[in-house]
Image (cartoon, rainbow, N blue to C red; front, side, top):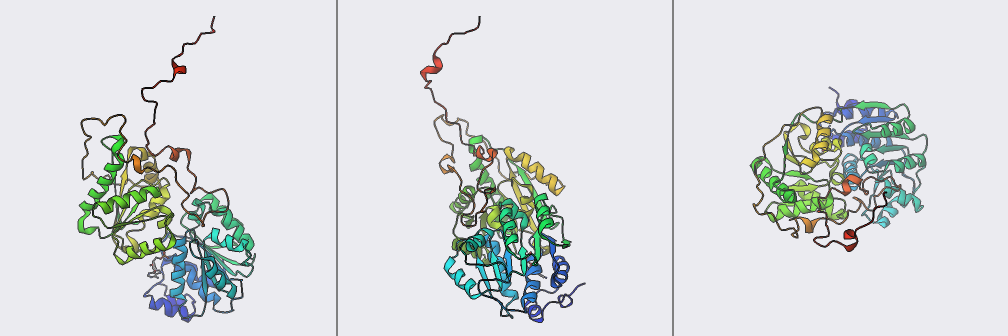
Amino acid sequence: MTKFADLGLDPKVLAAVDDAGYETPTPIQAGAIPPALIGRDVLGIAQTGTGKTASFTLPMITLLAKGRARARMPRSLVLAPTRELAAQVAENFDIYAKNTRLTKALLIGGVSFKEQDALINKGVDVLIATPGRLLDHFERGKLLLTGVQVMVVDEADRMLDMGFIPDIERIFQLTPFTRQTLFFSATMAPEIERITNTFLSNPEKIEVARAATTSETIEQGVVMFKASRKDRQAKEKRDLLRALIDKEGEACSNAIIFCNRKTEVDIVAKSLNKHGYNAAAIHGDLDQSHRMRTLDGFRDGSIRFLCASDVAARGLDIPNVSHVFNYDVPSHAEDYVHRIGRTGRAGREGKAMMICVPYDEKNFAAIEKLVDKEIPRIESPVEFTAPSKPASKSAKPADEDKKPKSEKAERSSDKPKSSRSRGGRKSGRDRYQNDEPVVGMGDHVPAFLTRSFKSTAA
Ligand code: AMP
């Protein structure tokens, strides 16, 4: 078995790894670190939870140990799709670089420009950024990328989902041709393949697990749920979620509850709290410090249920999550793999349950196709019966008041520069997905509709 000491890392880095309590390198670390240390480009196909952050941070620190930072010219660049992921990489950097004098700056939305500008002006070794924010700084003339020796692209597939690929291409072009690139993605979509063919030079390819593989330690299940009446679906779904949680009892020490839309994340968190469950919401409309506080609360156990959107939760390293609930079936099958990968980490047991309403059956079928197995059906722990008397025509469905008029883009200042964003714009299908009743004209029929007309036919 490979040992950290055999990988060629700087002794100061090895000491930090030892302090972090890691005994052996994970497969992505064993595969990526040696070629990275000899200056090769690396293409890592790995999901979060595989130790991939250390697989690029450790060699980067070793490589940067020689040389000094210059004003406004960072020596290395790490691009991450979301603020939380960027912040997480920065935290990792602090742990592994603690015995060195390397400096870093974090460029993410929601953190003041001024402070980061001052750091960059002084000169930093490592710049960790979301693509939009990085280009903001660049365009303000505060930053030169011509000194970048090592560039890391983390979670490239999520960058693609968020419409960041044109930004990434632009950033690649702003850095020197001679730079070393360490590129990570959980999946190799054709667009990602194109980017790697264009910007990576003869990379060492390391694939640690098929992206569609769900961990064997995760017990999966789905409730095929049909509401007693269409306009009661949202309320009954929330009741069902609570029933599923209750059924798990003590075994459910904490859970991430995924919803497809930010408004739903808020509604579910609010509803859980109303019913005495300790829950908090995390999504891109909440400000950065709020999101960080919520995450810390979830990590230290003061928050038991984290209601999350994909963008906010993707890649977050939260150990010991006993359960994942897919309150909504994700509309992209790969998101299912990422979502349930929040539990069952590092060989621990985990449980992932999903609620599938009739509308979502097509997306559900795509998930089963991707993971290439049947997800066991579980019985609904509650039964719902519609009240015998139908509600009057004019009455609003239970959730009507809470329905959003429209949805804003998931991110604000981390938005892609290009117009190719998928996150903010709704597909035609999504637009009509909110089950709002069609408002008709009641009993009133406009006069023009009742007017008779002459036929011109002979
Ligand atoms: P990542 O895939 O980078 O999000 O890492 C997932 C988790 O694995 C993090 O909590 C790391 O601290 C941890 N980790 C990384 N490398 C190792 C290792 N060699 N041994 C044990 N844990 C590790």
